[in-house]
Length: 465
Ligand SMILES: [Zn+2]
Image (cartoon, rainbow, N blue to C red; front, top):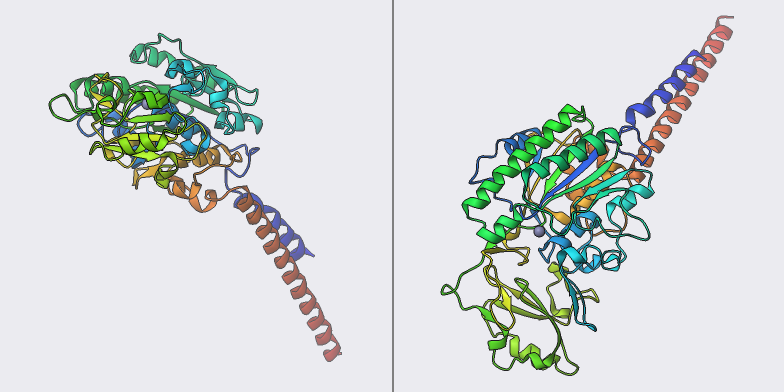
């Protein structure tokens, strides 16, 4: 009987030992998560600038060589992939610009943030999923924050004004104080997404190789130091994971005289009279809706017309780009090679740097760093894809993800205790079932042993007797 009791005690004790963290939305050991995006921070921007705080963060955590953004490599589309884990053709935020081909109406990046139906298009951002599973979420300036999804907003949010200065370091620090001090510390939020508009703006205005860009990378580095200091001051270091990444990289636009520019109005056989609606002059991506019966004419005029212009019918888009299969995409898609832009009537593009190019181009790759209690230390890992970040975040938060295009397998090597944390809720259930089975087998074994010993003793007694 004593042995039996011991066996039952052992069985009871084995479950908490085997229970790894992150096994469900009710797990009290779940850590908080801060997702930070520095817009347009190219993967290699720390190579020509002293970045002591980013270097320290890499020592304390994990650094991926780079992160491949989804195509199209622009702000709204890429950020919504981070939030949903879906490729752009699946979440439908296909451009920074919202448009209506019937009314010819267009809304630029900022205005488009407030078009609910543009964002609320079948894919739920992680804030809403987390809230539905009992967590508290917040978002500051992150693209998609202003919209309402199935009638719900991110619980705590700050949306910038249309005239907001995205480069001001003092404002950055006030925003960090709010997120760390108020939202995480006082209000006990579980997840916050935090957006900074640089170094994208300096990259556009001065180019990725400019001294202005290098200065801005120093500002980003100071900011990362400030964020980690604030986290320490509020005693959150051991309970808060941080992911720092970006939506895309940046490349230099080739200047007049260096190149033969792509100007559609100058291409023989192409006429704007054949076009019902166009999205041109916004960088390397253009889209055209030809008038009825004109598709073949427009397509054959443009195809092969410029050595650095790729012309696709929507259905011909390379599958790897995941940008051919959404009703919002127009029938003809134009993509310029890095350094070129797609102009309509005249070259209107006078910026020195741009993005939106093929996501295979190295200049479009983004940087990616993580640090916190659930991550390994001092590790450099192979490149990852931004589409996989969503599954990682759901895992860290212990929530069940929505249907998505990424996979935890592609990032779980960054996690500590990855044998225990690599699975989902099903795996933890399997682990628990295995514990019960092992315990039950042990009890049966002990009972059989007791039975044999008792039987042997009785037989010995009889023999002696
Ligand atoms: Zn961007």
